[in-house]
Image (cartoon, rainbow over all chains, first blue to last red; front, side, top):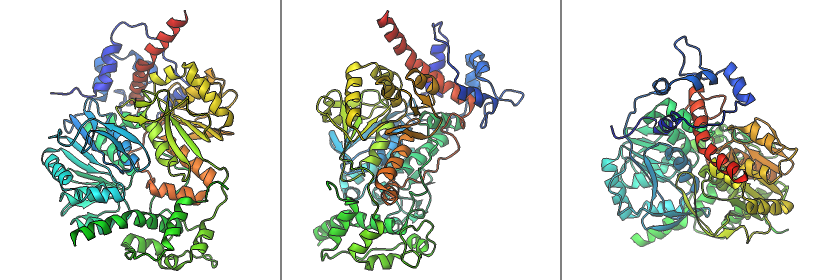
Length: 299
Length: 299
């Protein structure tokens, strides 16, 4: 087997077995309180009760490893996140922050040219890997945007690369309007998928896919998410799917991902109609000149 | 007044008043369905009912602007996000994706040296602005991490810069263990604050602050959030606070931020005790050698 299960945790345990002069762990009041009332204890003692912090400190390495052991669904070695100028930053950086925790898989960014790639909102990322260098990925992630995503969906060299990668990928995924690109590559034909709310049904229909109004969905190995931040939820679901609940639970705690938006909103259903109307118009303004540009080139 | 209210929306409306050959907007089935059942209509017609999409299309520019008008609490021109090697990527990129929508404020990254800054998980960002060049910010955001955040909290040149910026900032904020840095700069003394769950009460007490176990909190102009992804919630609350509900509603829809984690977790209270124990040990392993290093240097 190429990879150790829970290598990140293993790493801790391997090291902790050495005779180190480790400062005593400080148990905070919150932790003490939780031990009295464990809400989500899963990895229990033989008598069905939860381990206390002190009991865990005393547990032998092998026993701890046995406790959290879950079989891996797939062996994931490489996770590639495509970047192109104008992508929505969080479409890529949300999944990156989740998937890069899938130790020991290597998570990295890929772009057409080596160098700096600029997001829609001014994040400039150094990308060291180009599509011409990458022949295989276990997971491909395609983020979205508006005008520049439409442009990418017309880029035949890029689409050819995505099709080639998809041939041997374990999972081919998109976030937000990244589904436009997967669609344009012909990968969503006859499949159910989701995407950003903007022109969702229309765009997926264009590619022969059926829009399902879900936060994220999958049709076989094709995982797609709704807009921007939904990529975080999808990625966590993917970690859960591949590595099991204990590992996903760790990743979620590592990101302290127990979201509490300041008010209800963030979906087309929960947004004020006037705000929604104006947001839609703003996207139209970004997108329509590019559509016109491509239509005129065809003529 | 230096900035236009809702300049992003204004921009659309200013342009849309021109006689352009705009393709007809496609109203999807979802949108039609929502118009029948608007759940969160706020900007209503004089009779108290919600505008339909068609009615909004026909509304004069001035009337639409009047509809969504809310007074700004503060005039925000500059938003600086501090980056340093080893910061947790989402600590910075979550708030960046929210705050960079605060048009026309300029949101940018700042680091000690010009050039590439590497996050904990391999995101390499080009930063063009150094602390020596920035004398004033309206909003400062300090992200966290583990070992490298501790190291930053001992960097006197960095702390001096933060103190100087804080003198004239409208908001001084931190995400996750970024509070350790604000604390080390003496800015949280006597204040309530929150931070990542790891050693939360202990670390804040060290800086004379009182830990409140909230997703985000503020004590006057000092806004602090819990770990990593909590920076998104805090930033949205800040946009709401500064620019009003309509603008925050727009930003939330723009990020499609209606989170649906795949399962309950992501906080110390909702995580399995064994997973929590091992995550804490992993952080200890990262942090403790750096603490030892600094303690030995003092001797």
